[in-house]
Length: 346
Image 1 (cartoon, rainbow, N blue to C red):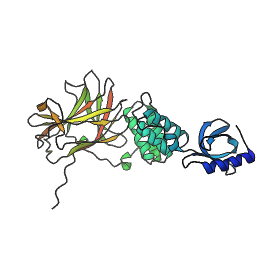
Image 2: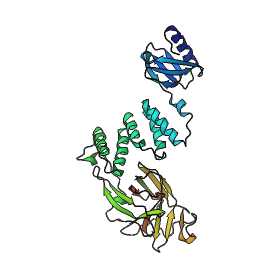
Image 3: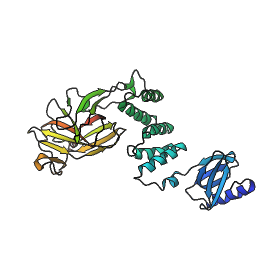
Image 4: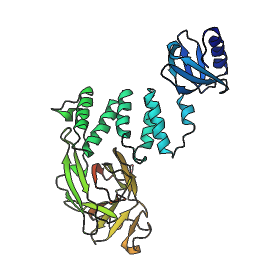
């Protein structure tokens, strides 16, 4: 029922005294507080359950100074693998101005909720709302990169860039660029062999930053993987190399799995274990070259039983992309490096 006056004041005192440590709070214009669980919000009133949800109070909005929502109570019923529930929780938190909490929900739900296409735009707004313009800029640039015909995204990149002080005429001044092998003009990038889906791999230069990346366009034709490769101007000596590291982003709607295959001077190929790449935003990945972390034709490509043989003379590295199904996918790879073991201390 609706209540007012002295009776409401008494109930406020009781409800605040009995309120749990985790609870929603309504602060009245006279600074009295109600502590409980908000269960309904109407145009003119707000309904809150108090006294261990035994009492129901409908408070006129005209008497409310502010409302404090308890995120943890709301999130308690959402499981970590309930990505749709996390998305809905993020939408609720965002609507209450709880951008920090919404970011956590959307980051976990991103790429995991079928049919939902607005996670990244919501993340951009939340990052802007928390003053994290650099992260908002990175996200919207990624979206524009994988959706080059979207004029609205391009305008948003420009708008957020201006807030960051990025000069469109000299964007490199605002960005420190780390070029790996993708920035070496002597590297030869090739599309797919005939046993994989058609793939185009070219070096792409970001016109805003001057950063060079490898652009990969996959056209599905019913095979289980897409492949592209890079051949160095002279063989790589990977004796002391521990892994390959890179950043990547992909435009698909599902998670992709990526492996590398290294070919030595004898023509023997060794395929690494897989890493997973979520859709929509840049991810840093590392694939180990150490230990028995490879499979090869020596064991009929079954099991990871082999070390990388002939690593002192590697002639080619192939990147294998699995799980893209029947969807065309555009990918970008950046900051591709081969970290080496630290030199022994003298």
